[in-house]
Image (tube, rainbow, N blue to C red; front, side, top):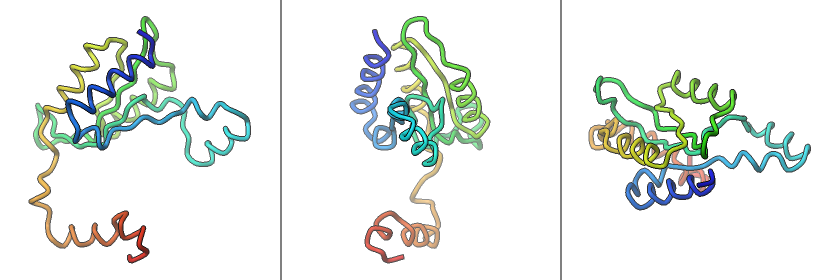
Length: 152
């Protein structure tokens, strides 16, 4: 199975099995930056970074062993066959872990699906019903909808 086929299969699994996680999961198409020197400069100026994992889930979860601790999200680098992450990819995964993310890599479909299922099974990091009302009002003032209408 190629890396693209592996990633497509994993993405389809997330979309079907965990629609709420799928809503906050994305792939950063870093391969697009290599089109031309002008594009590379443009993307670097916009914040492009080498080594970003294939899939990022921006969904906080409580750690199983330490309920007071949270994972900021889940990052997964996928490889095909015997391929391994590059030094930059390993460095990015380590940086994510140092910043509170659950980050991993695999070249095995079953392992990838198991990791995603295990992360999805963790309890959400917060209960939105328990967020103070004033915090909700503040966040609504700065929400993307306010930005779209220009009413901040």
